[in-house]
Image (cartoon, rainbow, N blue to C red; front, side):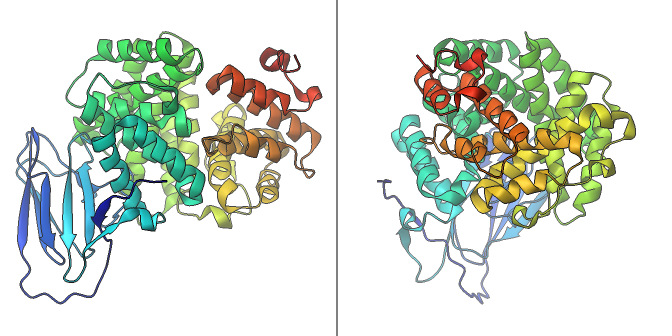
Amino acid sequence: MLVLMSVALIYSPQHNRTNRVVHTIVRTDAGFEPNKLTIALGDEVRFFNDSSGYFWPASDLHPQHAVYPAFDSRQGLPSGSSWSFTFDQAGDWRFHDHLDAVHDGTIRVYAEGVGPNACAEDLANPTCWNLLIHKTLLEEGIDATISMVAQLQSSTPAFTLVCHEYMHDIGLQAYRVYGKNVPLSMTLRLCNAGFFHGYMEGYFSGTYDIVGAIDFCTRVGRELGNSFSLAEGQCYHGIGHGITERYISEMPTAWDDMYTLSRKPLATCRIVGRTDDERHRCFSAVFNVLRAWASTAQRGRGYTDFAKNLFKTCAQEGRSAQKSACYWEFAVAMQFGTPISTVARAPDLHAFVSSVDYDEYAPWIARSWATLLGRTGVVTRNPKDLIRVCRTMEDKLQLACVSGLVEGVLFAERADDVGTRALLFCGLPDVYESERMSCYKVIQGDAASIRSAVEQKSVCTRIPEKYRDQQWCAFSSG
């Protein structure tokens, strides 16, 4: 059972107050003053920047700000300037500095006649998830927090769609609580190991301690690597997240230039990565952060042109490893602004990718785009419809698309699933033989990368023998 915790009820009554009060929160170099504030519904909060750099106030979660989307300045504020927001919804609203998200706070907005309520009674409300998870981490520790996430993921389909983002946020919060001494366990791999990505965003707040970050990733590999071989690689992906956010905060003159923003973090990735895999994961995170950065400022504009502009950044890349990471992360931008439940055809990649790069990178882009389709569609769509979408692509891209679908299904699986949903997907009677072979290959690679030996064997024994790859499943029939 989830622990019942009392937080404010999220409520939007009509209000006609004439005595609106203006409150002030100051951003200093040390954080927010105050970092907790109680106000009345309809009051205004003025956020003043008294720090030495830029400041961007926004609601959680970082970096999407989806809990209270209107509560977002949508631009960085230079030192000495301010931004004001009138709160028209009662509740407890957590916020942070989008440019240095380790600094956070909470604003409680109360309304007459509205008292505290147990958020566990309203698990469909994302604000409740945010508050419960934060409170659990502070009061009960990281193990209890991850347990709560696993319960939410198993019981609430809508949470599955955002579980990775919440694990990001838990990682960021864990750095606030534990600093560099965070306890490690296999549970941190939950939801595609988003924990490590957010943790490193916190790690690089106010520091360029690259050596310390590498030492931490080495510790992750040493303590978790036997049962989670990608643990250290996911940590290096986290380094890419952290250094990119740090560089962005210090380069306001380049905020509209994705190519320029990417130069320093990519150069750092080339230095810190010891293997091609570590460097690629770090590169990928750089472009992941830049895509999120661009999309946050993009709201309300045309997404087709947005995606095309992002892809121009990829075309400028001269190094193939960086170019492939760029296309992989920016591919999902082709889907922005369109509900996944309405997608009947795949995008025409010719409209986004230059003819020079098309033959080499189009399959890679198709696969990345399809991971989003699989990740979100597995909850909202009939699996047969997802396969049909891939078949609307040109022939040479269809198997790449199917592989991406399966990766997305695995990405969204529940903690107790152990590949079950993906295996059912591969076994659908509507799946062509070539698609089925690609499908099972992806599942086996995933099992070898992130699962314990017991879990890997469980996955392999459920794959028909003729599709088992001896590299990954040689032991499964024994």
